[in-house]
Length: 78
Image 1: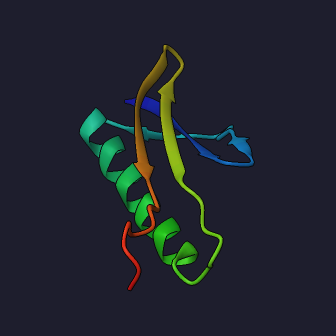
Image 2: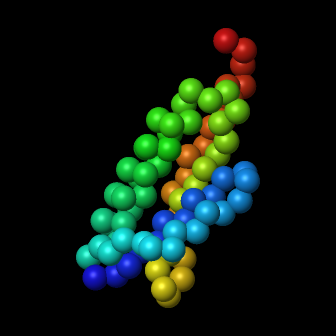
């Protein structure tokens, strides 16, 4: 088992995960990251000033991958 750390980054800074979670495969860590992003998207959906947010996943050996949620306004008025 490998311990993965899920650091959250937004426009205000980086919030380090000091505990992490153990998974057998990187794929399981990827699923955890996407589920976390999904929860963040639900939490941010009602905010007018929502910002991009990313989860930077690392192990003790270093960075493994990043998953991001990008809020981009439409280019045309609705």
